[in-house]
Length: 313
Ligand code: HEC
Ligand code: HEC
Image 1: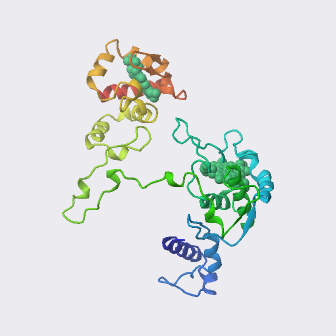
Image 2 (image 1 turned 90 degrees about the vertical axis):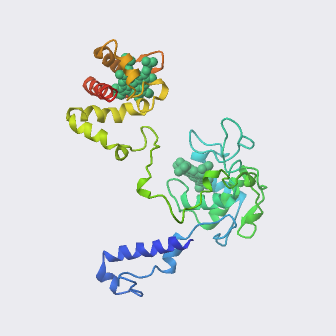
Image 3 (image 1 turned 90 degrees about the horizontal axis):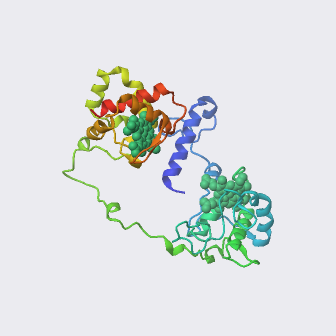
């Protein structure tokens, strides 16, 4: 466990204790800076401190065999992950997929992708079975881990996994990971004569996903204030149309491009609104009816089109 996590735990205990001040006072050992709470006990920390690292640090004493793991796996894991780790329905696949990592559709499993066996041990104890996480004992976790490794043909069927032999398990893709060597991750922090942070503005967002309201130029806010009638159209637009029309995704005419919209408006506003409501396939792409949001009323769509046109004049 890392120090910062320990500090966090301490704060957590303090915060909880603060709610019951009087009860806490009775067993407070170390009142700390604010005279509240106590240091978490070793047992309490141990309950959270369950991470296992690639070098095996954190593994508790214990062991489990492939054959014991088989029974446990069939009872507690196979309903979702399949008898052979092939995955039932759309539940995650745990075995197979060797040599597929460079395919168009790579199959990333414990055997084909994971670089460390410790992740399997840690993840299984921490999070599985899905409906009852942390219900497995240490030995059960060793046994099930051994069995999943066996399903991936990484150990023999008479294998017994222990804390001592854990690092003998070699994961096929262990060498497949490397430090990101792209130049933009090697940015050095500026230490003097740096740019005033207030002058830096983040402008790249994912259309329709990142909230953009706070990035808007002053001018836009002012013009909206001048046309309070269009707040509704703007809201509909942001919610259902911006994802394509903000940046011209999939051939959508870009809102704000005066020339495009002048052409589009030649048949008249009514015709343009009608096409937005009913949808159509044009030369540039498919405009889905109501932008694909059928819960919108015709009035909503009309308001959104008016908003788009106003923004493009
Ligand atoms: C009720 C269905 C269910 C059961 C039972 C279940 N799992 Fe899972 N398992 C999941 C789901 C869902 C995920 C994906 C969770 C996520 O991505 O947040 C998962 C993910 C995993 C993964 C990570 C797979 C990957 O490639 O990311 C492993 C390993 C795993 N489970 C092992 C087990 C083991 C071992 C057992 C039995 C002790 C078990 N699971 C029981 C549903 C289940
Ligand atoms: C999935 C992407 C997508 C979404 C979402 C979307 N549109 Fe469109 N829209 C298009 C495309 C593509 C076109 C251009 C089709 C062509 O003319 O080839 C278009 C064209 C239009 C036009 C021009 C019609 C014309 O007569 O030229 C209007 C108006 C319009 N959309 C309004 C809206 C409104 C209002 C919404 C939200 C309710 C919306 N769109 C949502 C893709 C989208």
